[in-house]
Image 1 (cartoon, rainbow, N blue to C red):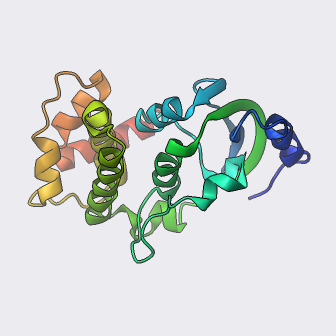
Image 2: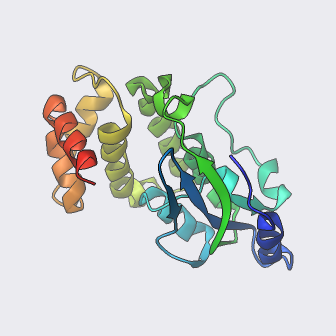
Length: 218
């Protein structure tokens, strides 16, 4: 990966006066045959709580490499346990971090060139195992419970679980406790896309075929 010229200077200019704790830019996704600018669904300033909603609503492209932040934020206990290997650690860490963020900004500057590698650990490696995602969501629930937010945010968290089980979990085990828990969620209030995914999860082979067709005709 590479950092464009003046990217750090541009990000620093947004936080230098102390009004923002974090600033994110956009990034360029580079593959063997194309470059695609990846943007935030919204551009502007969010509170820490709005940032949390943004993360849980799956609107976030907030990888750790795309931002600059105040050092003091990282002095809190926001990391997963040392002995655990978790998928999507960026999102997990930022969910923990959101409780300490006053204001953060999402900006339109391209600040990173991300070179997609289909053989990388995060894409093709062992981080997509079902038991790792189950542990991931258990830890998030523990954090939200301590913050008194779990009941309020449970509906968003369930949609996030459906999304991650459908798109990020390989070799779905239908005898697994987490799978049965997710399948039993009432989905009447889910967004249409995730209501469909939730119902397709009952038939993992059909789900995989549907996802493959979707990618083929993108």
